[in-house]
Image (tube, rainbow, N blue to C red):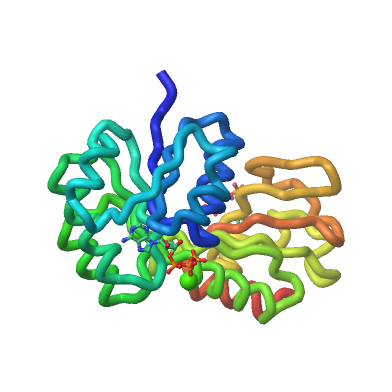
Length: 218
Ligand code: ATP
Ligand code: ATP
Ligand code: CA
């Protein structure tokens, strides 16, 4: 059986989630209190509804309890976001993901019991900052406060050397998960692999080691 999703709030974030879920072949109920937004998304989603989700009756009449996963993407109205999440939780919705606006909002959502709290603006900000700090950094993903994965372009200093000769793990405190070379992808490279100029190297390590790599990448 297909997983059923409901997305509340059809701003840029919620709208983008709706479109991506539909593209993945999922069933999606799109909800917003703004009729215009609902009309905009109605042709693409399985079902669309105009509702103020801070109104408990309205929320119940949508049968929201039966959805496998509800995404609360109400942006600026923190109060509406918190109240909606609280009611979803009380109705026993299995999985709730909420977009947090700030740290205070996140704390309250955690207390209420949201299963997943996301900070799209903050996370994209972190990624872009890493990207602009060094031209060699293509992408950066924070796994936790301590560890990150980074995608780096190999420069001339390490090109031509094997991973073994570079003593990569010892010297840079990070592990190479994969190397992208043109259309090829070398997953879990062996120590005798020779790094080539413009190889894209995907490394996993402690943030301080990854930052060192990003900032002093040959
Ligand atoms: P984003 O930051 O994701 O681009 P946005 O800045 O447009 O979105 P908002 O306009 O604050 O975010 O909220 C997103 C949507 O949530 C809006 O379309 C708004 O109508 C809807 N929304 C806000 N409060 C409620 C509510 N109580 N019930 C239903 N929808 C709501
Ligand atoms: P170690 O205790 O460090 O694993 P080793 O000689 O058994 O030592 P090898 O697997 O032979 O390790 O690799 C030699 C060196 O090459 C390692 O010390 C490490 O610095 C580096 N190395 C090998 N594979 C990777 C990898 N995927 N990412 C980063 N460095 C690697
Ligand atoms: Ca916004």
